[in-house]
Amino acid sequence: MAEAVLCRDSVELSGRERSVLRSMAVRGTAAELYCELEAGHGHEHAAPLVRGEWWLRWWPGRRVLESVADCGAESEEGVACLAPGGHEGGHRFGPADAGWPGERR
Ligand SMILES: [Zn+2]
Ligand SMILES: [Zn+2]
Image (tube, rainbow, N blue to C red; front, top):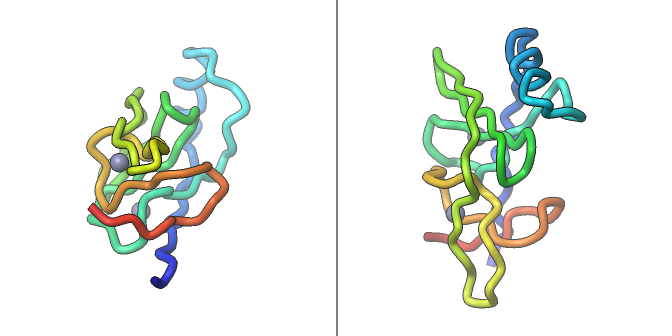
């Protein structure tokens, strides 16, 4: 089975988004973020600011900084999906630093 890969589309936080995060007492986020959805997903990208809590979602012409709970799906081994609820692409089970395990919906 071929390993699927992450989208890795990159996005930079705007000054406004950084100040929103500061006002929410969210710290330590990188200035540049990467989409953590499965490569080849639809047009709505998602990058974690605070895993399991804050996500930046973006698509052509629009971007949203929002608090989204994890997807909640679990693999047969009981490993939780790390992507935000309602995400596009397949579920992403496993540790955050691992590649995409290739699990498909
Ligand atoms: Zn993406
Ligand atoms: Zn999922």
